Image (cartoon, rainbow, N blue to C red; front, side, top):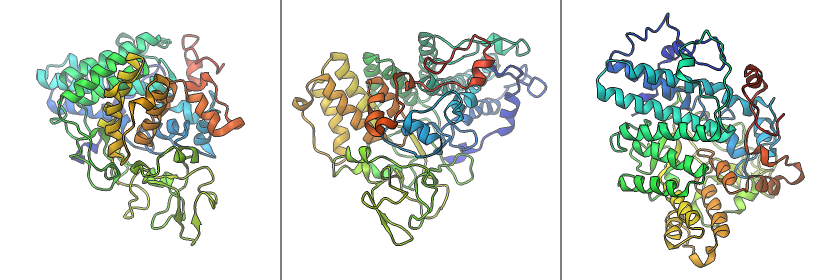
Length: 489
């Protein structure tokens, strides 16, 4: 099932020629749009190219589990992760500015991939390939475009989306403004709604490829972002009605070295390998150099504030390592942290892979059915202005799988206490997966508050830090059309 990891690098090189830094254009000397795509293999090449920036590569994959990936940086801006150097420290202290390349690079490195998808969609729409193959290909391209657009929108706010007519005339310099907020939401939403129509059902989608379920999951995230509670509930119900996804019994086993190809809780995962095509580097990032059997770089820790928020018997903190005896014979823990636990426990999340001291083939799980359940619970409660028993029952499904007792409606009868609880459950369920807990905190107005609680006077948190800054290069190239996020000028 992991053959999908072979990426057509040569094709992408041909797609990334352009003279305007705001645009992504075709090198017509290498690709003739009049004859490409002309076959199913050509369509597959276009589609695989759209997955390329979404993989786990340190060099150019937005879902790398290193400091160059969005999970790492976004979770480091919350209590889930903490860092005392590098981009992780900038995220932890909310001290990022427009010259902080570690946070501005996600837009700089990936926004042109949206333009690549736009050109590929147009090329495929005007091709003569089989209509069913065409529809499936366009659906995957639109889902890829929406996925990347949502992730950048979530981090930076509205972005530049170059119109097709501009992309088709790359020799004409055209500084472009960012979309308005409503235009950005509509752009992502329409791509996903279109994709839902022609993507395969979950049971028919290959592992690591998009499905109707994944497109609807992204719609849930978009609607949560916008607090469109009724739409969240509608999409959650649609996913549940597929009768495909289910919670697996063993939470911890999902992050083991065993294959997850047949796991019906996973809505979308990035397959990982040892060949650096799409690698999972997390054990390198999290583990100290003196960890038994495996050594890492100890680039990141969790926080004791996060660790203390778990109930004692919660299985979801199994790989949140609060004590170990190192190869030096010293036992490290909260009372004797050394320089490996001074901020918090080790956030391993995945099973340690003793057969590998560097990369691991544990796949990078990004979205799971558990998110559908908690999202529906949150939507029901906030739509009605107060939780009901259905919302509580949904939360208890997740808690029971974690080995926890039920909570009672009487203890969370008002919306504020319910939302506080749902934020805790979200952090416990999805830590070190897709980095969306940052967005959850922002949605409920807790992002700044949590940072100050965690870091005290060292925190540089402020409401405007809910969005990351754009680089000075992007502002300059925009020639007045591209406006920086407020607070960073």
